[in-house]
Each structure stands twice: as C-alpha cells, then as structure tokens.
Image (tube, rainbow, N blue to C red; front, side):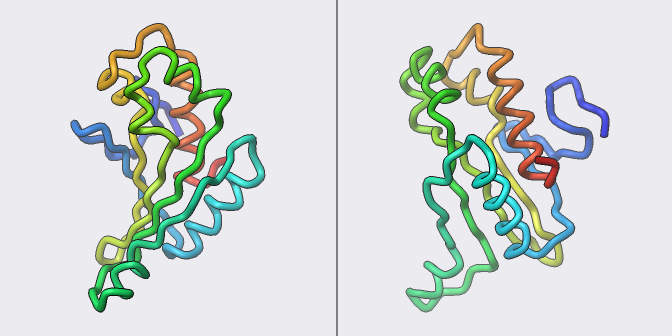
Length: 142
C-alpha cells in the first residue's frame, strides 16, 4: 500500500478528532487475538484489555463487541512525556476493535494529532515510528 502524506497507509479513515480507523477482514475476537499476539511478540507491553461489551452485559445492557487494548513502550513514550507531560493522559497507546454493523473496525489515536494537541515539537521521527507501528498493528502488518 502507498503511504499518504500524513504518514498513514492509504485507505485509513482519518477524522479531524485525531482518530484513524481501518477495516478488519476478521471477526472482533480474531482481530483482538491477532493484535494481542503482535504486541506480545514485539518490544511493546500489553498493559490491559478492556472488553466493553462484557462490562455492559454485567449490568444487563447490550453493546456490540467493543474491545480496547492498552499497550506501550516506555523507551518510546517517555521522551514524549518529557517534551510535554500532559501527553501522559493519552499514553499508553490504545487500539479499539469494534463491530459496526457487519464491519469490524480498528481505531487508534493519530500520534501527530496527539503531538499537536500537547504542543510536542521536534519528535517527527519518533511520531512517524509510532504511526507506522500503530498502522501495522491495525492492519495486521506487524
């Protein structure tokens, strides 16, 4: 796939709120398993997984499959927090895998948006690296 000028792969849906969404050709469970395995086989650390649908069911409410994976790498994230401590509200990284009708989508925060949000400058190479990793995890290319 060709890279778009903003650093994400072509075909990603990027909105003005800093979210990047790609479509998965697998089920929610299979997508979560694939991303979890990729995280565990990388320098990243899986902090936790939140199954929002299971949480909703625990209070007798319905929610389509919606799972949040929270993960990070302190070697990569710490310099961003050193540049702007407020970015810690958005770290560690998160990937949301969710069912939208018949489609399974994978959504994550655009690192360049987070940099703008928190006034981080001079970290373009690190932000591109993070974007590449997130896009690869979302698309199954890691």
